[in-house]
Length: 137
Image 1 (cartoon, rainbow, N blue to C red):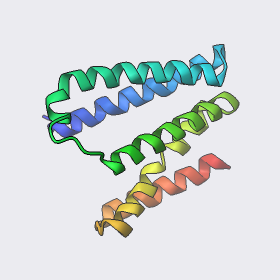
Image 2 (tube, rainbow, N blue to C red; image 1 turned 120 degrees about the horizontal axis):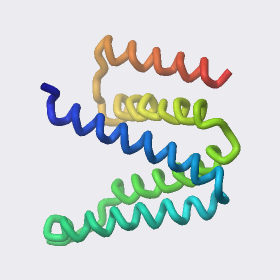
Image 3 (spheres, rainbow, N blue to C red; image 1 turned 90 degrees about the vertical axis):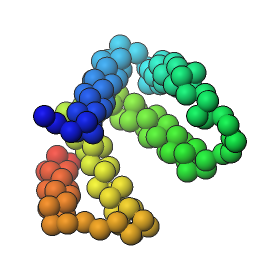
Image 4 (cartoon, rainbow, N blue to C red; image 1 turned 30 degrees about the horizontal axis):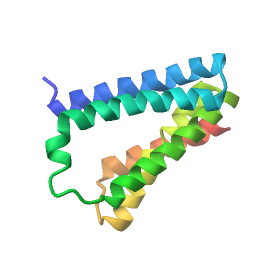
C-alpha cells in the first residue's frame, strides 16, 4: 500500500495534468486574457471554500506571511505566462519544459535552505535537465 503522501502527490499530479489540458482546450476556443479571467474565478472559488473551512486556523493572531504572498504572486505571474505560451506553442512540448521547474526549486533549497542531495536525487535532476534539452531542440 502506498504511503499517504505518495497517494496525495499522485492526485496533485492528476489535477495539474487536467488543469493544463483544460487550459489548452480553453485557449483553442478563446483569448488568453479571458481564459486567465475564468481560471482566476476557478481559483478564487477554491480559495474562498478553503478559507471558509479553515478560518479558525487562519485568523487567530493574524499576521502577514510575506513568503506565502510571494508564492501567490510568483505562481500567479507564472500562470499568466503559462496561459500565453499555451496559446502560441505546443502543449506536448511546453508542459514537460515547464515541469522542469522543480530542478530550480531544488537548487534554491540547496543554496538557501542548506538541504542536501543524495546520488539518486542528483541523477534524477540531471536526467530531467537532459530531457528538457531534448524537448527544447
